[in-house]
Length: 365
Figure (cartoon, rainbow, N blue to C red):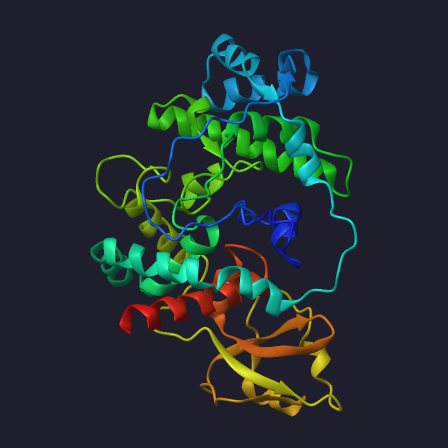
C-alpha cells in the first residue's frame, strides 16, 4: 500500500516512520504514462558499496535468529548477506524533510486526479474488468477503489521502483539514519528483511531478483514484503503470488488488504461537511485514523453534514488543509479509514476516492 512520498502530509512518509504495520512505498515523483502496458525492463539500482554486513555484530545476531527461528542454513545466509550492498540513497531519503510550505490539499490532489491517471485507469479497468468484478464480488471492495489505489501507487505498474529490495531493507535494518525512534524503525526493517528472505524461499526465487522502492515496497500495489506474506493473494490461480508481473494478483491483493483492515461492503466512504468556527468542533481533530463519533455528537459540536449520512454510522472528522485557503472538511466513514491503513494520510485516502470517482465517470461516459 506508499508510505514514503516526500510530498505527503502526515502522513505518507510518517506512516512508515511510525511503523504502525502497513508499509508501502511511493514513487510519486516519477513522470506518469498514459498507457497501460508491460513494464519496460530497467536496470536495478544496486547499492553504493559492499558493506561486508557479515562483520556487523547486529547482522550476525540476525543471522543466528533466522537460523534458529526459521531454519535457514547459516552459511547460505551469510553468503546471501555478503552479496548485499549498502544503499546510501535509501538512508538519505529516510531522513526527515526540512520544513516546507503549509499542507495544500488542492495541490496534492492535482498530482493524482489528472488526465494521465484517469485515462490509464479506464484502460486498466477495461483490460482487467473480469478480475475486478470478481474481486468486488468476493471481497466487497468496489472496482473503482482498487483501480484508483493501483493508479496512485504506480500508475498501473509503470513506476514500481528499481532498487534491489535486499539492498534497501538490509541497509535500513542496520544503518537507519539517526532520527527519533531509530531503534524501532530498524527493528521494523529487520522484520521486513526477514519477510523478504522468507517470501523468496517460499516462492523459490532469488531474493536479489526483487526490485522495488527505496524502502523495499514491491510491485503494482507497492506492498512491503511483510504485507505480501500477510495480505497478498494468488488471485490469478497459478500457484504463486506475484505482485510484480501479475496485475490480477495485485487486484485481489489490494481488495484482500482493505477487507482485512476494516472495509465494509456496501458502505460509503465520506460525506462533505461544514464546521461552525464558534463551536467546539476542533475536539474531533487529531483523533486518530478511526471512525468513532456519532453524527449527533458531531452536529452538537458544530459539524454539519452537507449531505445527511446514516444516523447509525460512526465517523471521524477529516480536515484537508489548503495552505492559505480554507480547509475542506469531510465526515470519514469506516471505509475511509480502511484506505488510510494502506497509507496513513487523509490526503492519500481522499485522492484515492476522488480518482476512483473520476475513473468511473470517464469509463461510463
